[in-house]
Image (cartoon, rainbow, N blue to C red):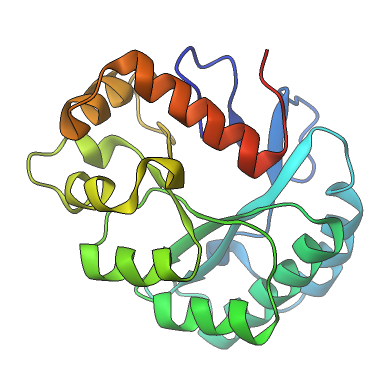
Length: 208
């Protein structure tokens, strides 16, 4: 998630990273869960997320296209749900073709923290279900695609429920904001103020 000038952003870090931005998250990504050591990594994560500038847990979640055993992914994800709720910090979610299972994991483990779906580019029906469960959305370069799922979804989720990002795309966040404002039919300045308000509300941080 990035604000317009890209000086305020939440960057996903490896747990052994020494180069830390102002705001960041730690998480065990579903692509990299390993049966041999995921429990140990969760123990490390439980300590690392107490760092003051760590504002979220993630990316974490479920991915049915990953070669990692899906049941193993779910165990690692549930562990991170529990950690996030213990420290009361949002979850940043990577999810591919597993939204039903994702919501089941969250509901069955009594999740109470904000859930942000990273890089959303799925259809409006899925977005509507996620929205009904209180999820937030982070939209990125998919918005630039004409009539993309992301472009359709951002119009129906409501201005208070989304963030904007570049992820690893080689593009300025300003282009994402410009396109989002165009899709929504609002001025960029209004969009900037809204995303900043969303950021402050979800992450409990005051941007000055």
